[in-house]
Image (cartoon, rainbow, N blue to C red):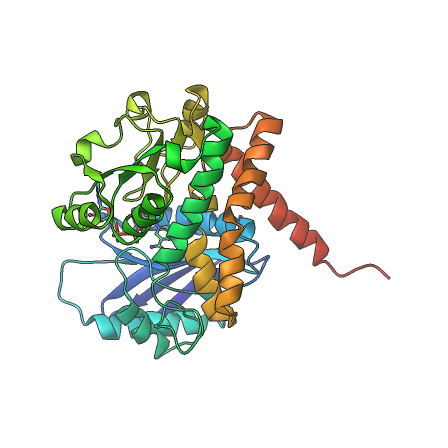
Length: 354
Ligand code: NAI
């Protein structure tokens, strides 16, 4: 096992992880530890090159710093990205080796599931380190699948966003959900209960059938959902769906969903604002999952998770108020608020002069 550490000019720490015995190859980026240990999931994905893997890890780690800061969590931001290669691997041994790398950071980084990793993988990580969350819940302690919490935060945010932009309630809205997996399906049930009209699409027909049966939603083809005649577009599948090519086709006046990195570039936030679309920044509204993960690691109660997730709509309002006052698009207002939150805490934590 090799754990190589370097300090680039930015405050981020970069740790390359490599273990020839198990085929582990990856990178752990700690973007910020100002507010607490850097927390963010472990992605296991195919990358054409090590540099593309590193770019993804930096971008994701920065996003986690901002997400955790705005969710008022005592956590910094980090991310692990492991490269999936074509060869056969023993997943259990590979993730245990990754756990040893996490343990080597002595609590500066806390990992959990992300794209391509599962509860089973985190169990293997936990054989080597206690700095891991996303394990099955024990007793009345938080844990397990965070998706229902993520869906709850998105739902509460959407309610506030349609009031602000459309001066309406969800019962008078049509919501188009792209992707009805773990989060999208839970969101659909909450929206049905609130009386919203639902349009749904997914590339997995089984997921569509399940949601249509559970909620009475109307199914659309995956390539029709973005331009559907809806008041709200809720991206709950992949990142990068809002770009200079797609924004022109969007008909909804509110975008609010769970997917990470919905904007292809940060300029797309201004494109949406120029078109009169209220964009609810992704990492502000989808923090329910990391709140649940944080509670598991920090041994908070389920009640603490509930209180923090229920405040998601208010946090979105703070960001949108700043956007209105500053003239910034919502995504940049969120970044600015997150950076100033981290900077203010850094100052507070300086030793006081006598
Ligand atoms: P999931 O994998 O359960 O669901 C994603 C769904 O999107 C799948 O049903 C998939 O078939 C569908 N899909 C993929 N490409 C599509 C396309 N082009 N058009 C339509 N549907 C498509 O994932 P999950 O957990 O529901 O997460 C959804 C998004 O929210 C992801 O971007 C994830 O990173 C993000 N997120 C999830 C959190 C959680 O607690 N699960 C927390 C924060 C963010």
